[in-house]
Length: 224
Image 1 (cartoon, helix red, strand yellow):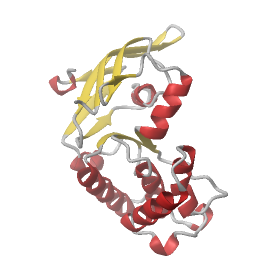
Image 2 (cartoon, rainbow, N blue to C red):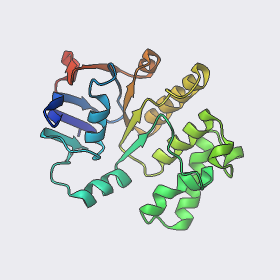
Image 3 (cartoon, helix red, strand yellow):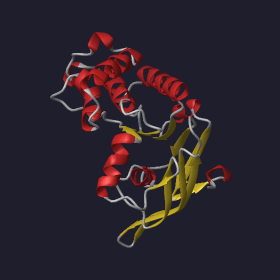
Image 4 (spheres, rainbow, N blue to C red):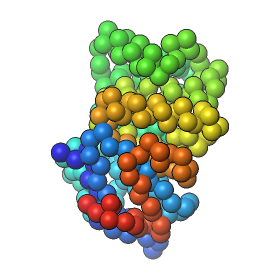
């Protein structure tokens, strides 16, 4: 079963086409970079895959399940249970500690408190932040905030992580450490990752690179 299959997806806003028949496939545990200039359609594609936006035509399947038949509640459930997103600007909840930010998605899923506590502790240790678990977001460095965001993304045990410029707000050394962490967790848990980026450094942890321009992905690797 494919972790992600995007087949001939189109999307327009008004009379402006943004995606023009985009296709790509990711296998479980596979990491791929999606590169291209600003305005090429990368973020729109990510939003369609994550169920934030809907394509006009085409098909998106995650772990064999089509997004087309899902209502808003179903798409919300998808984001809570199957797909996680890691953002450039972290998007941590400012009033919650690092530990509480990681726990929050599990609370939304109704996971029992005892199980949440064990899973949070494991994840905080895995991203190397046991000593910062009670820190608030404003007390953390950019790299630490991204590590919390990655632990939060892992909390629901997703099959697919969408990473939108995951190193774009970090210095090069910190960015390299975040890439190492993403690679390690992808391999450990067989999580597929699609990493949208402007940075060629990101491609070092990816088996394939998709190039997008004017809403089209070029290259035979993109065929679905």
